[in-house]
Structures are given as C-alpha cells and as structure tokens.
Amino acid sequence: MLEHGGGLRAAAARYGIPLAEWLDLSTGINPVHYPLLTPPASLWHRLPEPDARMLAAAASYYGSDQLLPVAGSQAAIQALPSVLGARRIGLLAPSYAEHAHAWRQHDIVWLNAETIDATLDTLDALLLVQPNNPSGEHFARAQLIDWHRRLQRCGGTLILDEAFIDADPADSLAPLAGQPGLVILRSLGKFFGLAGARVGFVLADAAVRDALADHLGPWTLSAPAQDIARQALSDTAWHAHMRTSLAADSVRMTALLRHHGARPSGPALFKYVATDSARQWQDALARAAILVRAFDTPAALRVGLPPDETGWQRLDTALHCARRDGHSLE
Image (cartoon, rainbow, N blue to C red; front, side, top):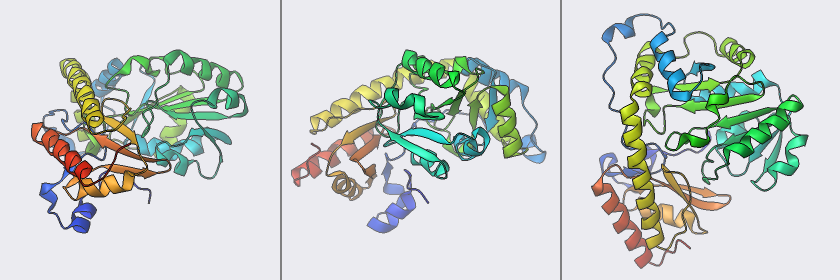
C-alpha cells in the first residue's frame, strides 16, 4: 500500500489523541466542500444509467463533451497502462506515487521540469500532474500544447492529471480534449471537497474512452454519485465564490508559513515546504493533533488549508511552539 494523506485513525492511535481533536491538513482536499443536497432516495434502488444532465453539466464545466465518467481518478490511473500500451513513459520525481505504481511494469524515465524538453522525443508518453503534487510545479499552457504536438507527431501521448487545477483552471487543456494523443484526468475530490463521492472524468479521444469503458466495465459511477456531480458541476456561482476564497486562503497560508521561516510554494489547496526536518516537523505538529504530510525524497512537508479560523489559529500556535522548541523550517 502506498502512503497517502489522511490516515487520521492511525495517527490518533499512535499519538493517543482522540480522533475528534485532530486537524487534518494532510490531503490537499478543500476543507469547505460543496454543499450538496442529498440525492433522491429512488436513485439507490436501481442500477445506474448515464445521466444526461450530469454529462451536460460536466461538458459545460470542462469545456468539452469528450469525456468518460469514472469512479474517481484512481480508477483511470490504474487502467490507463493497459489501455494505452505505451512502453516508455516519462514521470516527474517527485509526483503522485499512484502513477508510478500503475506504470511499474513499464519503462519509467524519471524527469524533472528542466529535463522534459530534451527527453520528450524518446518517450511514448509523458505523464504530468498539473499542478504537480506534491511539489506544486506548474506548466504553462503553451508549453503543454507544444509537448503534446511533439508527442502526437510520433504517435505518443500526453497524460495530464489535473486534480488540483480547478482553483485556477486557465492553463487546463480540458477544452482541447478529443485530439489524439491527449488524455486528461479530472475529479471532484479536491476543489469540490467531495473525495468520498468517488467521481472523476477522463477526457480523451473516442478510441481511448471506448477502450477504458470496456476495461472498467459497467456501472462505474453510481446514480447518487452522478446526481452529486450534476449539482456540483453546474453551480457556477459557487465555483466563482470558491476560487476567490481559495485564492485568499492561499495568500494567507503563504504568509503564515513565511512568518515561521519557511519558503512555501504550491497551488491554492496546499503548500509545499522543502525542509530536511520534514519528519521532525510532522511529528511536532502531530503532538498538537495537527496532521500534515511528510516526504523523504526529497525531504518536504505538504500543508493543506484549515477549515475555519480556529484551525488557522491552531496551526499558527503549533508552528510557533515547534520553533520555540528548536525546530527550523529552513
């Protein structure tokens, strides 16, 4: 099993702190989830069929109807290596570990942002998390379009996991979906804060979508999940409000971490802090019942957003106490 954010029960048991007292900042999930209405009870009583209203809402939101609903991005991540058949794939290091795990039987070429361009023509596929998780690296739309063009020219594929792009979607390639050699993953887990609904979409050309649908089988998305997706994707007023709110929270988190000696980077929903003391900081914050994500290669912390003012004050106090005890975020 790969390590992920969350895991509150394990942390509660390890530190002897009741579950209800924890502040979970380890996942990068929006702490203010979309305020959905409960799906109609009738949806639980029959096998799910494609919901035309949900599909229309998704097409409007992503700017393309070239999409396939799936049970969260994870379902597509696991299936894509079998469907695409690429032998040599470029991945960023570090990045979301489930991608490397899914492609482990293939020839993985480890890249950083500076080596992609020189290596691209040797690859069958390039897979990028945009913006990257956990480092927060962000690639310009024009650069991605150029990489896609070069890959497509030789039958290659650009795969973009846009899990964290919804807060600032200007550089998304979703509106270009349907072109050969372009596969985009989106979900309702992060920006909408609905990770438990397990709703995702694969935007790609018809051949890839058909192959994925055949691989995944029927009923990949439950009827209640489709109703949840329709609500969330069609609420344009909430989208605009949340993007404004998250932008303000992003500025606040950057300022808070800088105040405590860190040099944070990353998108609105989380900040990435490179520090040799990552595990010590994770432990120090956990002793204050605050869970953050720590990485070893390279050593770094990922800190999500608190849900309310109490959470912000708890984080500020815990950082202050950890620094007083001799910990440094530099």
